[in-house]
Image 1 (cartoon, rainbow, N blue to C red):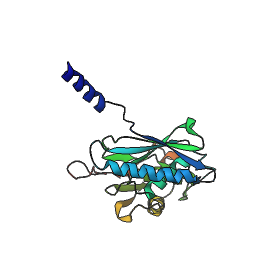
Image 2 (image 1 turned 30 degrees about the vertical axis):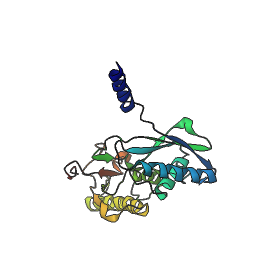
Image 3 (image 1 turned 60 degrees about the vertical axis):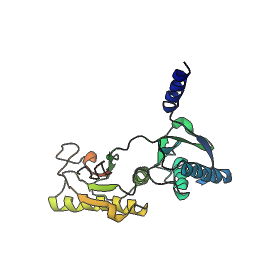
Image 4 (image 1 turned 135 degrees about the vertical axis):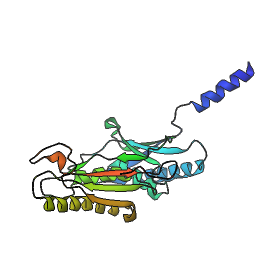
Length: 237
């Protein structure tokens, strides 16, 4: 009977909820943490470092709401806390930003969980452009900041530019390459190594929506992330 009870207790431990620790990081308006918030960030980093690489590994979930990304191009509170965790020594790929519309307040929730198996590839939402434009908008930068959290040192990045079918082939090829390079430049500005990025222009050869005229869905840049598989190889582009 006692051995059965011990067995059930062990099973309960391994099957317990993934949340292992939780913190509230105090913030202020204007894109800053409160003094207590900075202390909490370093407490979180110290706790995660103490876990080492022993199984199960942990990752941190930073949960909060987002501002209006079109009118407010500044870092949201969740992204600010994630960035401060990076500066405090938490490695890339161990911080996940999640949105919670009900999570708006004067603090951001941070909690730990067992890290799930990582996918070998990740495709971010497409960035769409006005006709003939290569301009990086506030919304583009917001999506790229979110994508940055998925990029680890072993990640390989493909930035693929596209156009619609309006215009001559040569112009569309050049425009697709310029759009891709503009996005790649933003990622480099955000700290991604240039050696990790491949820039490609596909013009109108890979249409998201078949069309012979202007089409916003075709005027886009796609960002694809690849991580090494168990044998060290990468999923082909």
